[in-house]
Image 1 (cartoon, rainbow, N blue to C red):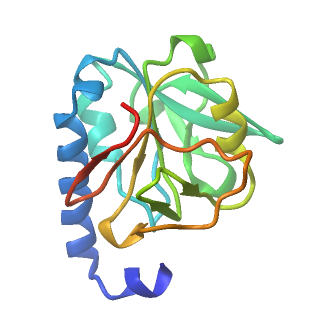
Image 2 (image 1 turned 90 degrees about the vertical axis):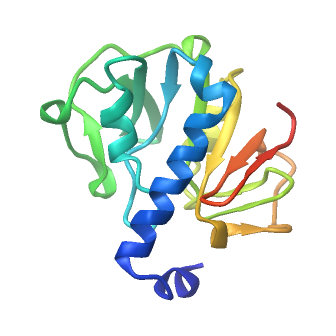
Length: 174
């Protein structure tokens, strides 16, 4: 995946991020959700900062905060309310944790996804643990070159119910 990403300039990756976020916004799941668990992107992920800024006043945008082995979802309240956390990812500094049952939609990053909904994370299991307590629809957000026909998956992995890339929306069980 990293070698494929290197084939694209920063400008093209920015355009691909904009396209992926636009397709995400077109989904009925996104449009109808009030509480959206999203993420601030690492450099090799679909960039979500503009999407977060665009929507946080109309919807409750929840961002992950890593504490030990746990991931908590806290509301985003503006640029001045975040700071770099673990791995340098921007995290809310304060706020009341949102219970999993309140989340209407989870949008997950990943190193790779496949057309069956499987997600390859970074190996620390944060999202895997979060997904076990979540009943909301789960969408993966990635660049088209991160989408494969099939990737390795374990029996305990919880698949995404849809994948949004910069080129297409794949609906699986939603």
